[in-house]
Length: 151
Image 1 (spheres, one colour):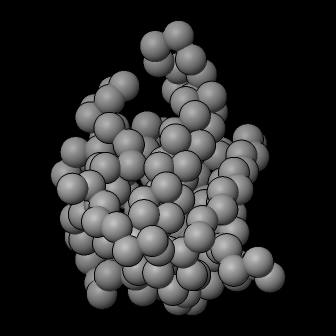
Image 2 (image 1 turned 180 degrees about the horizontal axis):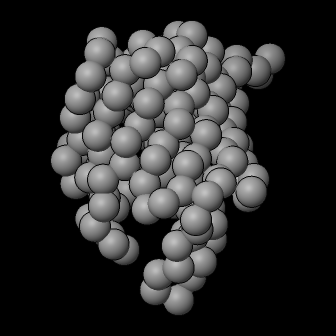
């Protein structure tokens, strides 16, 4: 089992960060690995609902993303299945005394861990999480300042 975590901060409120997070149409703007993203089953962002996420690089695959916990605007958790592994991930949006929001995510990866390119899978996921959440927090900052994102 591999444990990964990342923490970022944004000037946005937890509610604003949550709203951007839940608009999965923006996710490809935070990382270039995404292809099509769609809900396959259930009401979006409710426990038991399923999202299908096509990954286009470094290998093409589809991730089956099952929501397990959803408490807006505080936390969300899911289980992913792809490439012979299972990943449980949690994201928390925590208001800070200075007005910022702490966005903290952690994940546990189990199962067959594929190797591709020159990196091992956990290094790839670690870099992806860091890139995605840093880009996400930056977009949240823009929204908090009243700026358009991705103009």
